[in-house]
Amino acid sequence: MVGNRNINLAGTIVMSVFIAACGGSKSGIQFIVFRAIQGIGASMTMPTAGTVMCTVANLIITDSFPDSTQALAGAVFNTVSQFGTAVGIAVMAVISTSVTNESSTADKTSPDALMVGYRAAFWACFALMVLATLTGAIGLRNVWRVGVKKAE
Image (cartoon, rainbow, N blue to C red; front, top):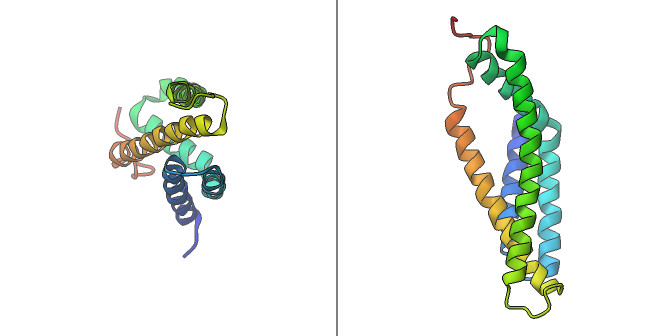
């Protein structure tokens, strides 16, 4: 059966596989094709990603915090998630630039030198995606009980 969960899961798998494929690409054409397919996977997760993230965050917040501090916890979660996005982009840019500058290619602005840096950044993204998936699987294993709140 096709549903939000299955489409999101399929998109996550496609995105993960093709992030790794971008890291292992051997040419610019391969990289572009793998990146396009990765984008298709990402677009499969977009309709549900924000909803899932906010729902899970709300479940954790209502389960972990007393009523008097839940609004503050939600605000902190939103701020940290936005900050995490900005930091993630900056870290990947630093990885890509550092690896490009350390490459053996003489012209650091050539497509070959840039591809070395891009591939390193995509391998780092893949490692972080695996880490986030494992963290979510382990950390969220008890969040499935919707509507059951601990006594304060």
